[in-house]
Amino acid sequence: MPPAAPLGEFEQIVLLAILRVGENAYGVTVRAEIAACTDREPAPGALYTTLDRLEAKGLVTSRLGDPTPQRGGRAKRFFTVTAAGVAAVTRAQRAYQRLLKGLKFPEVVHA
Amino acid sequence: MRNAATAEWILSLVSDNAASTVGDLVEESSPRGALWFWSSVLRAAGSHFWRDLSASPWRMVRLAFWGVLATWYFLATFAMPMLAVNGVKVVNLNSALVALAMPMLAVHRYWTPTWEIPFLTVLGCAVPPFLAGRAVACRSNGRELPAAFAVLTLKAALYAVELRLSAMQVRRIGQPYPGIEHAFAVVCVESLFVVAGATVYRLRILAAREEARQ
Image 1: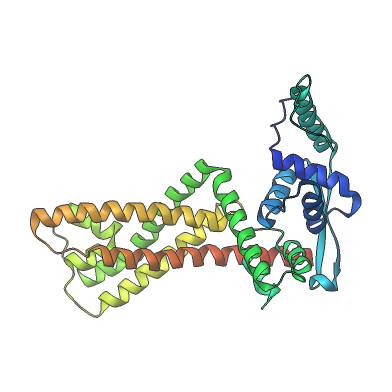
Image 2: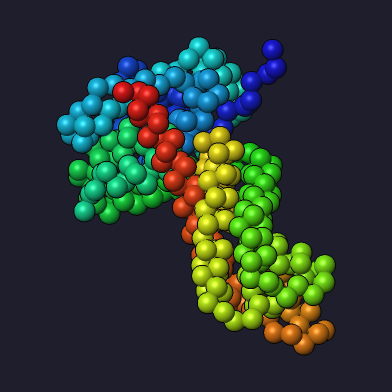
């Protein structure tokens, strides 16, 4: 099997946000989770194109929920991270951890 | 104004999940207002458009060349009967080729002014580009508008080259040529109809999908 293409930083953020939100992961909640955890609000366009790309790569799947009145009768698109997605994000995060291992940052004060 | 149906229509031209995306933006826009909603819709449409355009650049280049060839093919099939009927003064092989490939130039150079000129100009700028836009959309595999944009970019570049060559020829033989205003007008009108052809095809596909889902 060919090695999977490496994930970009924002792709990792989106995958982790979906995993954190769980079953209720759709555009609004994923954006809110990213904003809460990273202190930066992703542009809607960037988020939706990334979600589409992750789905095309087979790292997430999506399903449509029921239409709701506060959304003008439009259905939510719920996302779930696949096993391949979990493996890819874990691999990427482990790579970061290996890079950090042994480094000391005396000027950084941990909260 | 937060016209979600219009926003959904705009997004559906470049995204297959326009309804759920607009639903999210409607839900989020309640405390943020209409300006945020519309800027988000346009930025999302722009992102999708750019993603489709840049995802496979060589495919877009191929589609652009194919679209230009399709435009010339439709122009030729459209112009040939008109040229035959109206008896264009084609003086040599070079002129004949120009007349077939670029009838707009041929109109200016070789035709005696008759009522057909504005008629043919309008039809020539509308029908072949529309058909070419639709044809290139058929081959674009769900990337209709970016493919149309690629065709327009290549056509604009070719017009620029053609204009430059025409200017050189004018200096050489002293004949008048349409000029940059004419080329700009032709590019604008053709662009409109190429995009219209691609949009009509996209809307048909979406309608067929919706019908199949129901």
